[in-house]
Each structure stands twice: as structure tokens, then as C-alpha cells.
Length: 206
Length: 426
Image (cartoon, rainbow over all chains, first blue to last red; front, side, top):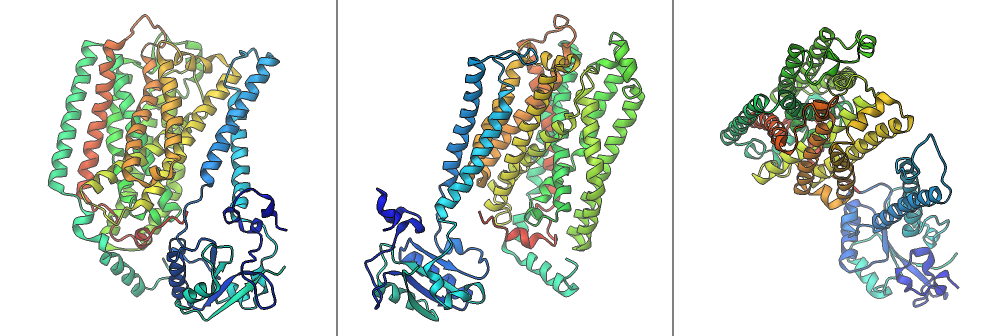
């Protein structure tokens, strides 16, 4: 049973590791299908392929390349991450919390420091600033991991011998079975139109 | 660039020249109308400065000089900030900025004008035996003045002023000369020469700007001292220079110039730097205040005390919100940084704020020892507006005049191809 089964939200909204296998489609040996992998040997082929997949409306998919391809994020139709808004809210509220904490303590247990007034706001600024920075940094890091589903130590893609060359000289498009539009026949037809070297189904094995 | 052969380099220049954004009408301003605009600006500036001179007689000479000094210190900070950016761009061989660098150079070349504008302040101070520079006055605390007299004396001050002016003009002329020569010849090694000039120039720049700020903005109240003062003044100039360049680019875009040469990507980078240095200013300003507040040494605290009474506390709080918190929140937004109009609007706001910052520093010197002696009151405030606006108008007029005379981007810069293709992958 996957972790997603315990959560009261649609699994397609979850990051990949929490989503759990889709049992809608199975391989010949009964293993659930995890996704469909297409291999390309030229960069332009990959870029045209991701544009086709983007235009077909797929959401849960990715492309793989041995080196960065500038502009592929546009071809893949990436939308901007919502992380900055979460970070903004977290950082500002943490700064406010830091200020309130000091204000409360110095009201509850006033101490004379160098004859400065109890109500001075100046000494509170460094702590307010630092706690704002600290929580912002934590939210950024943790939020980034939560959104991209990292770190994960294994992925069903590693079963594919071909996929190993994604770090050498081949390019790949991978469409996951959890995508609403995924259908072994239709997806294969779409990928075939993009002239891949090879297409294969990947099973959900650990 | 040295790894390119001469043929390859020639081909690169050809590719730059053939770029659609490099068509002649796209990268040159309409000189006739620009000259007209410049004449109008200089004329308005001259009228406003003449009004300031009248105000010096009618209202108060000390007040008039302080108001004039506010404007001069603000435009000097902006010009110096532009020179800082030119040197940084050369030092780090920055590719993205090759196109906008020309506008920073244009602003930088107003430094000789700034030196000319500062000279009257010094002349009046020396001739009158101290107008705002209280250490020159007879009734200053002679014990402290004598202690500091090896540094704070009129002759040495004049020598230092000539030294600062000389360093700035030398650096500006050298950097400008390399850039102009490159426009003509396309010699790629001029970039390396500019880079070498920037390496030792940056050191001289840092020291001369810091000591200029000590001498002209800090020493008028001779009791006060802050080692952070130099970087405080410098911080005020860096983002203002970017603000001015953003305004120039916005106007150029409005008249259909630099299309394709200055894109949202360059605007985004300028916005990031503007954001960063606005925060830097806030950081420096607060750090200076905070350390002085905590240590509570009378002669340091007195400086702030004078600026937290008699209405100056309004400006102080205006700076906290208008100069730091509001721009911080606005410039945090990605769409603002990527829009030239947005950046130009924030730029105008920041230029007003940096002028208010200088006002807050300089203007209380008018009556710092005796509030009852001369209190301008709201009736005299027109002088502050007129003088600062006059200086800005003259400065802007000369800037417009220069923009019209050179291509809007360095047409044969070897890094220009990189700049034209520049893109932020975030």
C-alpha cells in the first residue's frame, strides 16, 4: 500500500514518490505499468518530441539528456513554481514571530541592558532579520525537496538497460502511467510520430 | 577572446553587425531632438539654480548652499555608482551587460560635471570660513578641532578634493576612451586594457569615494565619525545608477530604440542588481545606526539626535519605509524586475529617495548648533526643491546631450553577441 492511499487528496496532485503505482495497465507478466520510455539520438529530435508531448496535454512526464539543453523548459511547457509565494509567507511570518517573541519576553521579564529603554525596537531587529532568513532558507530547501520529490534512491526507470545511456549519448522522454491521458495505445502512437529510436514500457518493480 | 583567430574574430564582429537589433536607426538616438531636449533641461536647470542664488540672498545663504549641496552629492553618487558598474562589468568580463554598459558609461562621463558642481561648495566654504563645515568656524570646539586639525584643515581639504576629482576624471576618461576606440576600431584587446584599468581603478575608486564622503558629507559635523560612512554613501549611488539607466532604456524603448538589444532579460538582471543594492543600502544604513545607538558615545549619538528632532524624524521614517521596505517588497516581484516601465517607475522613486537621504544628512547642518538662529520652516522649503531639481536638470541635460552623440550600445564590443543572446534560465 502506498503512502498516497492515506492522504485525502487526488494522487495526481502529489509528487511522484508519494503517488503510488497505477494498476490500470499491466505488463504481460502482471506487473503494473509505471510509464512509457522513448529514446532519441539527436537533440532536435528530443526538443520536437517534448513539444509534441506538451501539446498533447500530458502533465506527469519528463525528459532526460546527458547535458543541459537551454530552452527545453519552454518546449516542455514548464510553469513557474509556486515555491516563492510559500517562501515569502513563511519568511515574513517567521520574522514577525521573531519580533513578537522578543517583544513578549521583554514585556514579561523586562531587563535593563545598558540603560536602554524597555520598549526599544532597535535590539530586536537583528534577531527578527536572522530568524526571517533562517526560516526562509529552510522553507526553500524543504519546499524544493517536497515539490521535486527528491531525494529518492531508486526509480523504476533504472531497470531499463537503454536508459543508462541517458548519461552518455542518448535522449529520453518518459511519460508516467499516473498521467490522466496515459493510454498504452494512444501514447505509443503519439511517441511514434516523433521518430524515436525505440519505445518501451517500464514496469513498476522495486 | 584570445583563443579566437583573427578570422574568427572578424566573423564574430560581422555576425554582431548583421544582427537585426544592430540596424543604424535602432541603436542611434535622434540627435537633433535630443539636443533640443538637452538644451531645455540645461536651461530649466540654469533658471532653477539662478532662483537658488536669489534664495541665497533673500532667504538664507547657508540654507541655499545646503540645498544645492544635497543635489550635487546625489548626482555625484549616481555618476560614481555608474563608474563602479562599468568597472565591475569590465573586471568580471560580464557578457550580459555588454549592451547596457554604454548607458552606464554615459552616466559615468558626467563625473567631470559633478567635480565642477562640487567646486563652488568648496570655494564658498573656504571663502566664508565655514558655511556648513563647522570645523572651519571660529566658534567650533577648539579642543576637538585642534586634535583633528592635521586632517581637517582647509589647505589639505582643497588638495584632497583635487585628488578625488583627478582620480575620478582620469578613470572615467580612460574607460570612456577605450570604449570609444573600440566602437571605431573593433580592437578586441581594448577590453583587456579596460579590465586592467579597472583592476587598480577599483581600489582608487573605493578609497576616493569613501574619503570624499568623509570629507564632504560626514566632516561638516566634525564631532561625528563613522567608519561605515564611505560604504553608506557608495551604497546610495549603486542602485541609483541602475535606476537612471533603467529610465534611459525605458525612454529609448518608448521612442523605438534598442529593440532586441535591451530585452526583458537585461531588464531582469538590472532589476536584480537594483533590488540587491537597495537592500544593501538598508543593511548598511541600519548597521551604522544600530552600532551607534548601542554604543551610545555622545559625539556619535548627537549626529542622530539632531536628525531625530525638529521634524527630521519624519524624513528618517520616510527613508526606512520609502527607501527600504517599500522598494524591497516591490522589487521582490519578478514581473516588476522584468518590465522596463516597472523598473523605471521604481527608479524614479528611488532617485527621489536617495535625494531625501542626502537632504536628511546635509540639511540639518544649517542650524545644527542653534535651532533658534535660523529655522527655515515650510516657507523656505521651496529652496530645497528648487536647488536639488536644478542640479538634477543640469546633470540630466548633459547626460541627454551625450547619449545623442554616441551609439546607444557599444557596437563592436566582442561580448556583444553574448549580450544579444542573453537569457536568464530561472
